[in-house]
Every structure is written in structure tokens, then in C-alpha cells.
Length: 339
Image 1 (cartoon, rainbow, N blue to C red):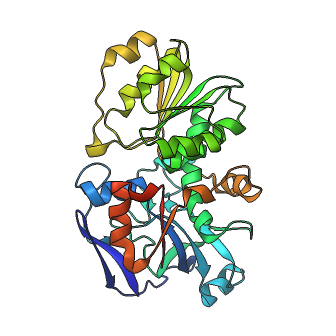
Image 2: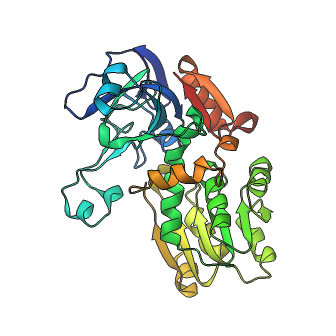
Image 3: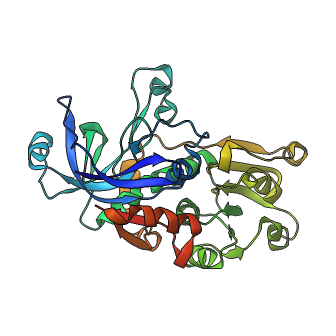
């Protein structure tokens, strides 16, 4: 089969590799229909991993994806062969203390598809456990089904944030996760929602999706709140300064949830700002089992996924898709690769 293989930093090649085969009774083969390019994929592409150059290469990227089961796998799963499915790429062990405590997203033994050494879905086929497969309703197309993983990340961040009715919320970074956070904050009954991003097209889209105020910089939040700061800041950037900028947006006694992965695995932070304000800070990683909620929110249009899928590429165009997303050219929000 054809697959987009990360050979080295900034070196993706579309190659012929062996098709995956089920090694266990519960494993299924999926023909991939759509796979999104995620910010963490960009860290692998640019830096060699989310914690620096730690990934063993080569491997196949891609963890936000949807597809259809092959005929044999469809029979095994009791589903129609043309049924669209989305896949949770995180496969926890299910046996450790943290899995038993409900923190499956923090499992130290997790197998995560599309993160070395486990091949992902930027390929024609991928092998997944049956437990990771979620049937998608007809109202969600393959690109939208791929973005359900991103929505799950945003849902988990909102669960950690515990937004309260009518409180002010700032979303720092209006990439795919940030745009979903804006929509979830509106659904949660937030008061004023402030979208912050240096790219005007992204904050304009955030306002279309529910934000009240667009700011190009965290420094504008003081004026937007008459010097008070916001009750809740959710940071969804890839900047090393994201933590500090979020702290500066928050009010005294405010809350900050950090979702973004900083470039080069480093935060630059002045401790005084957070300490003197007495901020409550939480870090968010991936998601626990939230796919049913993500599907329900997208199914009836409470959360809009289509505006995020701005650009489509064939599998052979994967290297170009990554370069365009890195450069943020032509108004790209999320690249969708269709093998």
C-alpha cells in the first residue's frame, strides 16, 4: 500500500510499504478515507516529536482519521462494509493504576497510533482494535469524522476548565482546537468570549463560531475587560510564550488550562505573574473516553466541524500539505489528506 512516511525531520516521503495485517482477534483493518494534519504531527515533522527529537523514525504519521472497514473486518465487527467509522488513536493498557482511576489519557503504557513506533493513518489502510472504532452517523462526512479526535481534545480541556455560567473566557490561539473551544464555551453558557490570534482570518472565523471579541494579541485583553482580566483562559497555541501570555490574560484568582504543546518542549514563564494572581493552572493531555459526546455534539450541528477542514490533499500531496500548514499559507486551518 501507499503511505506517507516520516523519514527524518522535515522529510516525508510517500512510499510503498506492506499492508497491515490483524495480529489479534479483536483487530480490524480500515480503509482510510480522511486524515487530518494535527499540531502534534507538525511537532514530529519539525522537531522530531512533542518532547524534542525523541521519536524513532521512519514511521507513518496520522492520528485524526476516519474510514470504512474492509469486508472481512466489517463482518467481524458486525457492521456494514460502507459504514463510516472514526477511530480513537489512543489505546491505553486498561490495567495500570491510572487507567483504573479513569485517567486513560495519561496511561504510561499507552499505544498511540501515528506516534512512533506505532504507525498511523496517513496510508491507504490501518490496523486498529475494535474497541477504538466508533460508528459515525450519516450527517458527518469523512473529513468531519477525522476532526472528531480534535473535538475530543477540546471537550476534555473544557471538562478540566469547568466553565461557569456568564463568566468571561479567553481562548488563546484560534487553530482547530481553539475554534472548537470557542464553540464549546458558547454552548457552556459563557459570558464574553475573547478569541486571541495574530491571524485576522482566524479570529474572524472564531467570531462567526461564537466569540464576542477578536484580539490580535494577549495585550489587548486588558482593554477588552477594562483592566480586570478574564475568569478563564484556555491556551491552545504552539508558542513557548503561551503559558505566560495566558497568565497575563487571567484575572486575580483566575483559572488557566494549557492545551497547546509548546515548540521545542519549552515554556518561557515569569513566575511572579501567576503567583501574585494566585492562578489555578491545569495541564490538558489528549482525552479520555469522550468520542460518544463528540459525535453527539457534531451530529446535530451544535458544534460545526466543516469550517475547520479548509484544505484537502491527496496522499501523494502529503509533503505539500505539511509545508502549507507550517507556513499557514492561503488561509489554511486544517489540512485533510484523503488517501
